[in-house]
Length: 189
Image (cartoon, rainbow, N blue to C red; front, top):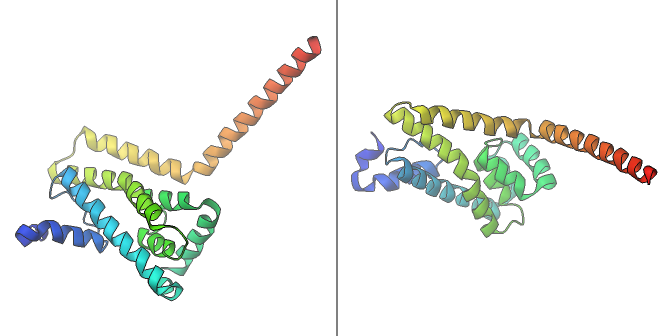
């Protein structure tokens, strides 16, 4: 493989490829090392994007990110704050580079940004690495479990507003029923 051809520097080559956002998350170094190296690459790449717009400002953001994506994320970020960033990293609703570039323009502290990138990339990278591992070594029952978990995770993210409405509607019905029963009890006293 190309990366392994770098010999002693193969780890560095792998991290650089992930840093440059090349979709190269097949665990050629094993599942755990592949995950850790991919996470390191994501952290370095995201940090670079964060600071480049912090230094270069909006013109740089407009040059490197799709204006529609930035406008959509800006709207969501104003409404949901760092939670929107966390979800965007975990589930690629928006390109993660665009999210990191955008966050460089906000007043978000780097420590919180680092935490969001770290925590947000863990579920996605685990799924990618585990699937990559199964592609590399052969499919197993774990493949099916990871695919089902990934599908459930994505469906919840896609339909979360509808799910919230269903839960809130049921909660309102329950509150009305409890209110009626409490009124009836009070009336009987």
